[in-house]
Length: 530
Image 1 (cartoon, rainbow, N blue to C red):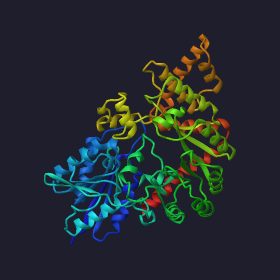
Image 2: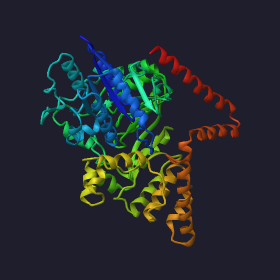
Image 3: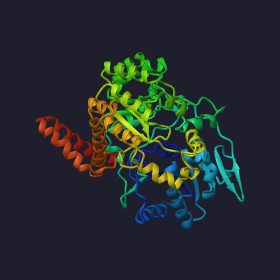
Image 4: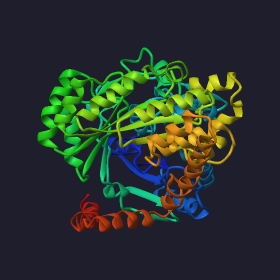
């Protein structure tokens, strides 16, 4: 009997953890041969629709591999691309089974099922493994839990299976596989770009204990109710083993929504990470759960930066609109405590929010001015994902129309306006204040200048406000995400190198260049031996 060939497809995300995890999982099943295609990578605030050449390269790979099953990992902005590639597959071979899974499918299966043979709703590892075994053995897969399967004119909607509680049982995300293909810029390459990264991403848990109204966790917690604890964590031993087996970076980034809070887990992590890994690391937390005990343990382990969400400088918007607990005073207190430990802090902030007013934005500015400097920020534009509580509220309150959440609109808005960049229009005080917030979080404005522009109503203060607004718009076009320097990275590298020259710091410049060269050499060697 021939091996069952399965192709997994990641769209616009080379570091797609579900695909990189399910690939080695399928490899362990006798008689199953997986391949993974990483179809284009995303660039913040920039989106390039696939070219005809890239589509041709994709379908040529499908023809060459001749899979029985093709599985797509689908996020909401890329549904139109998944639809297009699915049609191409079906035009080539109608009998190829196409299955979609991922975040968008899980929250909006009804909108997807007509385009494919089946869907995976919820966690995919158990379902894809069982599906592979059924197809390999030529048995029916219509009763596989987590799958929605088209059967003639009807859809079989199987129940959800319990959430995976033993995360240690899952394989580590795989890198540099010979059966990986990367399509971008009108070519196919086999070299895994992950080997060039300075930061290694690790997920130690699944789930989040909070239900922020703009976040998918607010939906998944209800969807998975009764299927086992929603928030689960891997053992410290398992996490360290993954890092040691895949260590090729200078920094570790733990991408959990909330990193460890359990005392016994943190005690073990504090002791073992510093001894067995010893690399600086970056974590994310909700400010409500961080305390000096946790900070101290993380610092002892090697913490370099901590990321947490402010999301708004208005306590009302944060708590009542975003359903995110916490106050400005708690944020200030935490920021000062972290500064005492000399830990860098990166904050998340969301603007372009219709519930913001001039007064709430001034409150946000006041909060920013009170934070220890320098500032490091992720400044986002508010997005409206399908079915999310905040989206439904904005529709009810008539801030957006229902069609604003359609996937074609999402694709353009989210991919081109994910990170906030200053703009001229609309010509309102609210827009000016948002532009000034951009200046502050990127450290392009002095506190006293901002205070002068906002605290008085004089000719001088109004001129100062206009100056800050104009400065934000110009710098945004040049230095902002998606701006001139962002699109021409070589300029940024030259500017960085020139700054070392101006300081006379030729030693650091040499170390930086040497590290980049060694990284590329090491990547090439790993690719050959993996």
